[in-house]
Structures are given as C-alpha cells and as structure tokens.
Image 1: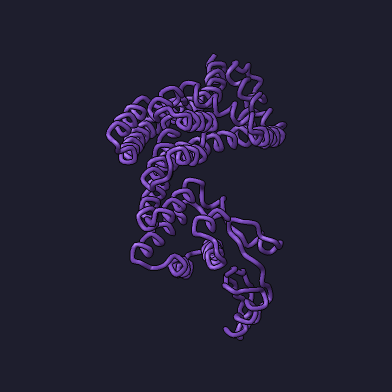
Image 2: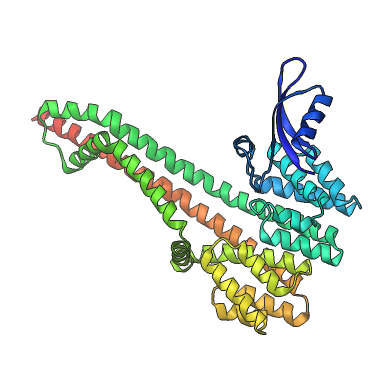
Length: 406
C-alpha cells in the first residue's frame, strides 16, 4: 500500500504533518478526515525512490547509516520472533523517528503488499539499501533463512557504522583545531596587523624582511581575501564536477590507492569494506560470483572496485578466489592468506569474517597512529606560524628601542 506525506490542520487550528498509508490520495484524505484533521496537502512520499511532486521532493530526506543500522536490527529481531515481514515493517515504521524513515518503510511494505518480494521492494530504494544489502536479503528469501540473514546484516551494518564513526571522531579534533587556528590568524592579519604596521611606519623605522613579508600578506588578504575565498570555492566546485566523470574518478582513486603515504591506509580501508561485505554475502548463501560483484559495488575506491570486479571475472572463469585475489595485487597478503585457508577448509564465510575483523583492528590502529601524529603536527605548525607573526611584530619594536637608546 502506498505511503503519502500529508500536511493538515486539527480542530484547534494547529498544523500537523506526517505519513499515512492509503490506497490512493483520496483514501488518504478520507482517513485524515476520520481522524478529525483537515488535509491541506497530500502527496506521494518516498525516501529513496522518485517523488512526483515538488512538495514530495522537499519533504524527502536522506536516511543515514545509523538509522539503517537501527532499522535492520529491529526488523531482524521481529522476524526472528516469527513476525511476518509486512507486520514487522509496519511496527518499525510506527516507532521510526523522522518522516523520511517512516515513509521509506511504509513504501517498502506497500510494495510487498502489491506483490513484490522483500528484496525487490528494497531495490526500489537503491540510495538507502546498497547492493550487498538487497543481495543478502534475496539469498535469505530464496534459502528460507531470512531471519538469520537479517541478523548477519544487522551486525554488519552496525559494525560498519560504528567503525566509520570512530574514524570521523578521531579526525574531528585535528580538523577543528586547524580550521580555528587558521581563522584566528586570518583575523589577526586583516584587523590587528595593519594597526601595528601604521605605528612602525609613522616612526620611520626600517622594517626587517620578516615584518615586510607579514605586511605584504596582510595587505594581500585585505585586498584580495574575498576574491581568494571565491576562487578557492570555485576550484573545489570544479574539482567536484571533474570527479563526477567516471574516468577522472578512476584516475584519482588509482592515485590515492598507489601514492605514499595514503596508499596503505586506503587499501586497508577498502579491503576491510570489501571483506566484510563479502563475508556477509557468503554467509547468507549468495553464490560466490554474485557475492563478489555485490561486494565490489560497495567498495568506495574505484581502482580497488575494478580489481574486485576482475577477481569476480577470474572466479567465473574457474580460478580459485585466493588465486584471483593474489593476481590482482591490490589486496593485503593477510587477507589473501586467510581466504586461502578458508577455501581449503570449506569455511570461506567465517574466514572472511575473521579477516574483516582483523583488517578493522589494523585500520583502527592506523587511524589512532594517524591522529597521534596529526595532532602534534597541527600544533607545531600553528605554533610556528604564530611565532613568526610575533617575531615580525617584535623585531621592529626592538629596533626602535635601539634607535632611542643611541
């Protein structure tokens, strides 16, 4: 049954909005009147597909990773308790925070009631449900193991969201420190340094090179600061459009994956994402070639993604997974070795899960090391710049005192 985003007024004149299930817009309006609400706007609401009207597009919001992790866990718990998927989606939608998430879940439920399978209904919202997610659900439905598959997915989505949050929080402090420091220095250069310079010039003192350089930079910021900011913003926008071209993005990602010092971190991060996705799919009984293609589709770096697709091609041609991954030369040797042991022992899924966990631990250690290096580096750089500013201001003062003493 479709979901509709509505805006209405109650009997007291208070504005109300939300999402309601109905067979048509007219039925949705009648349901609102039954609730003693006067509808002012009723439009088809979707969170991941295409909304037909302007109001629906404005109403739509992106569903984040944290919300997806929470919803997956809730649905997995209900399905494990033998609640059918339509009822589970309705119950989770009733408890969902935010109209976008509620609309998304009701849309999925409506598609199931219209005859779609759960996986097919999820595929109607590719912006929210990645390929590995829908492939896992499809395999669970076909094998009659939907509850187990959803439990695996819930663990995977929660772990991925938690790991991403750790990295973001670890890098947040150095980024804020750098932004605040540069902002304060820019304000000093624009508003404080010119006043001090006027004092030096009025005394007719000969200024040292460091002070003249500071004056030049301050003058440049005053005259061209706005133009420089606009040029920087334009450069960022142009670079973003350049990256939207697939060939350019592949070239950029290849540089990231092969250039020191970011190459090792990039490969580790992408290998961890690939291994974790592949482990979830293999443990969900998805055929290996399909699992490889689905796991490759959610690998962020395009260069690593191309290598993973090449691995899927080699496996389809009859090569072992371990051999295909070793030939690609892009995956860490530890991952290839664990895959080899898993293949030989007939435990590929658990082996991939162990490899993904080990890669995540190494990634966390690398992130902690990176942060421990970045923080003092930013402090030293900011301290050095402040020291130069202080010296540029103090040197003329010292020279003036020497002249007066003579």
